[in-house]
Length: 267
Image 1: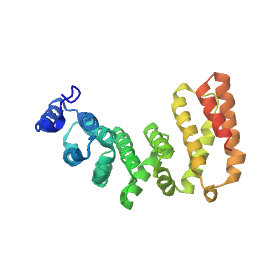
Image 2: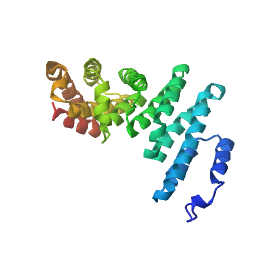
Image 3: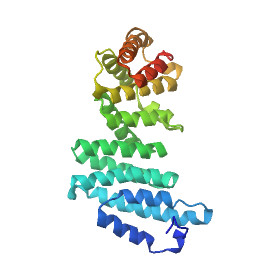
């Protein structure tokens, strides 16, 4: 109806209908599409849209709090749904970031599933990129989740750190404040070890790509007093990047070569 030109605001029962559909097909992702399609274009529609965002958030908070009662598949869909809602609602989700972050952190803390942890990391990153978490406890728990995953070279965590460092808002500065030099030293050591490894296996290419992008974004965002150990960068890290670049060139991995060249230009 909306796509055909009918005004959503004249259809008072649409939200109830949508909720029924979501329950019927067990797909919370639909809420994100709903909120994206119906973002207000006029100021007089803002309050009504905000009320729908609040209603969607209430549904997710209740569902995530009871996720242990659902199948793992549905629990994952709910977590993914939060990320989708963040994309769909955008800045209209700001008043609800704290409750969503706390709910996701509580859920993943009680669930040992790696898939739930990975999905939670992605969803929390979507929320954080909308606005850094105001509550210190939530921010600390989130960055602990990210750094633990990054040092284990899990792709969802690498994807999240990459998103944080490539964001165009105040997120980068806030993230840098939560990532201490000790973390970056350990990160550089792990990257140096992987970069120097020969040969490059196909399954390592996505991880290497994230590593190069993260290192580039980190060096770009560094303040002069943040550089941990210039000697390590020059004596260990740079030669490892050069080795990776040469190995990738020999294997015809153009994307890796280009990313390595870009990183070497900063070193």
